[in-house]
Length: 388
Image (cartoon, rainbow, N blue to C red; front, side, top):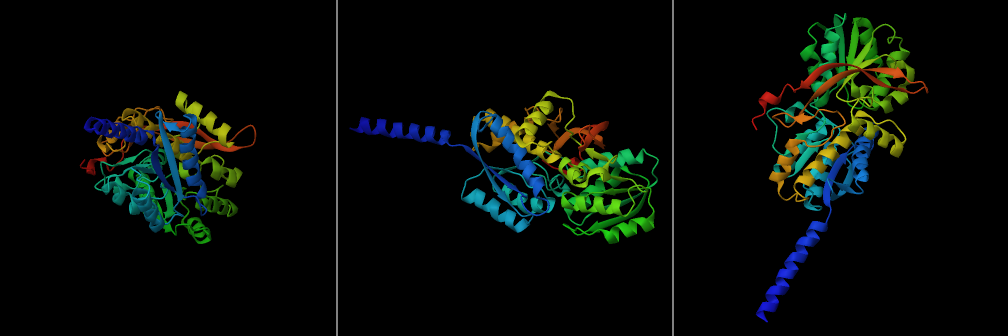
């Protein structure tokens, strides 16, 4: 009888292990799916989901369940979602936050509580330097990066003075800091607007009065649509050229603003025309599934999913062993749509950065074309402050 009980107990234990192994790994995505910035989160989600669909519901051969919730661009709401993911759903991996103020509110708490967070967009300096954490990985960039490349490009141009404008929140300050780090000439003005602002009449009047050689702006999503349209309506686009990071000239934004963005040059770590096999198949698959050209956000969502897949494969789906998960993530053994990709000492990307130009295609669409690589294997400015 005793032997029978032992056999039954062992069998139950084996069954419980098999059942646990059969459960999909839950990945919690907190992103922005409402407000005028909704498409940013939609594209991150869609890029991530494409990677899952391509593996038939798996990542790295491991069954996954993607939980997605809208933060409404509100830090407090995002914190509530994160808490629910951890306590109710037992999530050990999170991603998806679009805005840096939301990331700063959420990430420090979840990584302290033993969750691995992988950023598919927001890359605030606060989390790249002294606030770095072994459980935090940025798969996208550090905020300053995509402005640094424009700063260098404009510094090498004939322009002697530039007017700067961005929303008054952490990412806005990071983006302008990045531009200034490499632009060594005259800054006509540095203006911070309200986050979510839609009327830029006062700012445009000030630009006209300042008469700079160029304007550099960071206004993602609907803010960028409003600013570019109003800037053109004021007649300034023909007088004072615009520059910005990729966020202000992504494909969905260009569809909204049309010809007024033609010829504008912007910085990015990715474009749909990058010539590598992983990118070609991603762009084709994304267009086939969603009927639109992927944006930078979509590419970051896709890369994040593929990176997670590489780690899940390495640990055979055992996310309870977070040490092994993190070691696998650091190796970045996946085919990035960017081509070369690795992590620096602060677990932020070391990657190439490009200048793109807005063009009109033969079928009348507006998109970006890569015209120049400015930085190769670029490391962010805050890595040295990270003590990991």
